Amino acid sequence: MKTNIKKENDATIFSLSGRLDSNSAPIFETELQSFLACPGCHLVFDFNDLDYISSAGLRIILNTAKAYKNGPFHFSTCAMQDHVLEVFEISGFDTFITIHNSINQALSNLKNTTK
Amino acid sequence: MIHLFQIIKDQDGLTTLSDQLHIVSKEWNILPKETIQLNLVLDELITNIIEHGDGCAKCPIEIRMEKTNSHFKIQLSDAGPPFDPTQSKPVDVTLPLGKRECGGLGILFVRKFSDCCSYERVKGKNIFQFTKNYKGSTDCDSSADKL
Image (tube, rainbow over all chains, first blue to last red; front, top):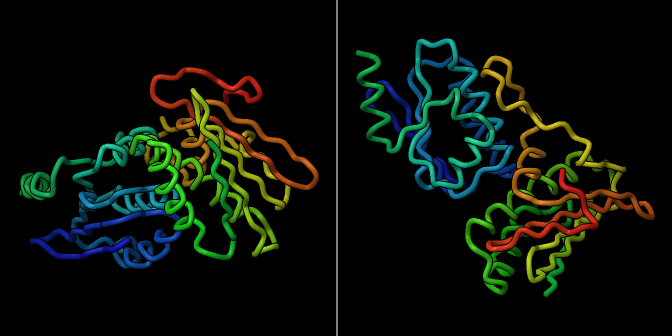
């Protein structure tokens, strides 16, 4: 899996591509460490190029949602392929994680929420 | 049609798995969605075996895939400590974020994306078998139980 990290306004965007499984999860978790220890900006996971996710990847998503649960910064996800969305829904993650259709929608939503 | 392969525990087993599924999905004309679901079920089972199977880092996990007229029948066998995935409790997906824990999603996916599962311990080996009906089929192998 490859991760591209960029800042846009007061949000950090992680664009994930490839496969997020028990091989790649520990690397992703290390990259995220500083964001989870002390959230200092909004966080968006862009899944547009993510082809596959297993429970090992979902565990990190869950920990991320927990780290951002009490605010003030927001965590959201966007642009999931259908089968990635399906495992999110089966896991019940769609009930507590915001899923946007596109990165543009995620960013504009953040802009509106934080006005 | 039968396809056999091995996962060696101390190597990159998940890459081997996706490579093998790529080959078999082409040979057997498996739909992309079904291939991903088979990959996820096998990934979760293999990851469990590797994480819970103490010792014997080089012991292989033997995987046998069969395509019948109605379903795929897949068997995993390994010589690790006894471990019956059918006894694992899946996570309660209705719990709110604050009460959610990390475990239990793997077995949830195994149950969701397979049709019949069975486990037995035979001659020092864990034998886990599952079937998955493919499009247009609703059969369930009578030798395995629906979870």
